[in-house]
Length: 344
Image (cartoon, rainbow, N blue to C red; front, side, top):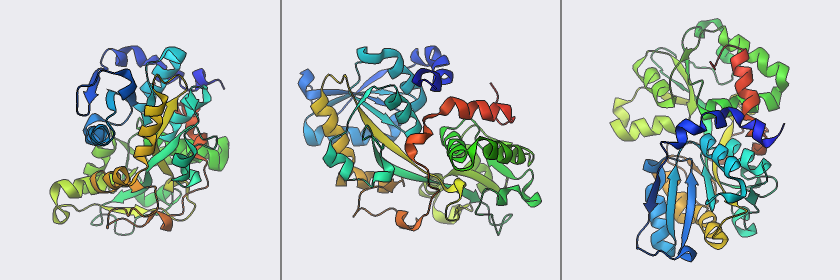
């Protein structure tokens, strides 16, 4: 499958998205010297990463012009632009979008020292992107209506959970899980599980926040989300006001995929040195602490601890999935449409 085809569904929405994309200058100072500036295509939201980008500019003197949109849309944009892209850096919320851009031959190798800061399973096998923060898939549950939640995806298929599971079918993290399921169980095995899941009459929500809130209120008993959504709610409302809890998945279960946000440097970057400096900064101690403390994600660098309420990353035993294999987005979407879990 060609790189263009692997993201063609996303590219189809690009024209509509492009009209809404804006460039936002981040960082301090007013330098207009291109040697002191980089352009970052950010699939992570401005609200989430703008403070970190501003700190990078303060600490390094390199100004950042950041373009914010969905990771998939920006991946499609980069493929469309090819060697004429103004981007120096692609900061993605998931490995799949990075993999699609890498497969298109658009990413340069990340500096070896930057790659070595992170365990090799959290970066591209060919060194074209590096993970900067991690997130685990979990079952978020309401203990008042689900005191003993399952910790495997097959456990979700038990009759007692019919009509009681929330999920976000169009969400990138759900689709990354399904891609991982295809890797672990093959196409037939993944389709079999998805059809059985569909038969459970799961409740579809727009996004992970809506799933989490529905679980917390008791609208549904269980939900499939990333781990940090619960901690966002706790930080917002206070622990005593939150009913929902996280159930981390059993060792090796496909539902326990650990995906990463990551960064790649464009081969045609106008400022490759600045781009590499940005990638290095994101695996540095200050940025890793930012991800741990401000976003409740897993830091990937040794010596930086996650939030106290979370199990250590080393204690989790995710399925054996090469994150570089999560780039086949279109085939996953086609399978979800085929099994009735996603509409065109």
